[in-house]
Length: 262
Image 1 (cartoon, rainbow, N blue to C red):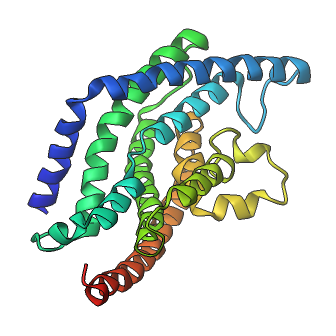
Image 2: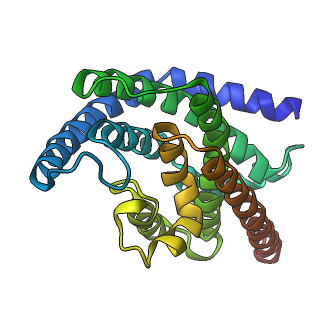
Image 3: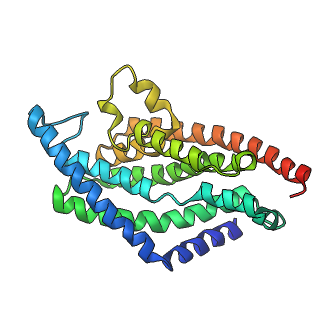
């Protein structure tokens, strides 16, 4: 594990070298949160509701800030796999004494730690300015900090699985576009799943997308031990299932490399 931890640290340090690129996301985050604030202020005022989907206006803005911070911290994993496959750089990766999927996982985690840390710093500052502080306990922070890395790993597996399609398609940008849109809608990035039709909610909340965005964000703004236990179980099952699929697809993909000679 030591070598993978160093890979993670190296990726984080490399990301810090280009802090300007990461910081530019803060401007986009500011615009998005300000637009959401105005939209939800009107929505709460027009409906004369104190809560929507069990969330007050302040909790809703915090929720959206968390989901946006998670989404905007996602490194370009699929594009990097595309590049490795097209340029033949994968051959160099395969002769190294590390697992390629684990190398990509720990590199992505290192990148994401830096990206998310900056995003959440900007988010906290903006949301405090817009709506102020919501009740946050030590328990809620602890549960959130447990769910967040599991969400990162789960998101990596989904994106990496898309990236592995490059062995057959060479370019997975179209698939990543679809994945991103699915995450926005089914993951609860733009709208908490509690506001969707009741008959849809059980299915949507059972999907892995909800465990990446909706679950951690909801846990932060409205902590509940029963919800946390259910979320951790869903994340564990989804990670296990997706890891199995990644292993199967990757094994098949590597055989294609040997079959085609590069």
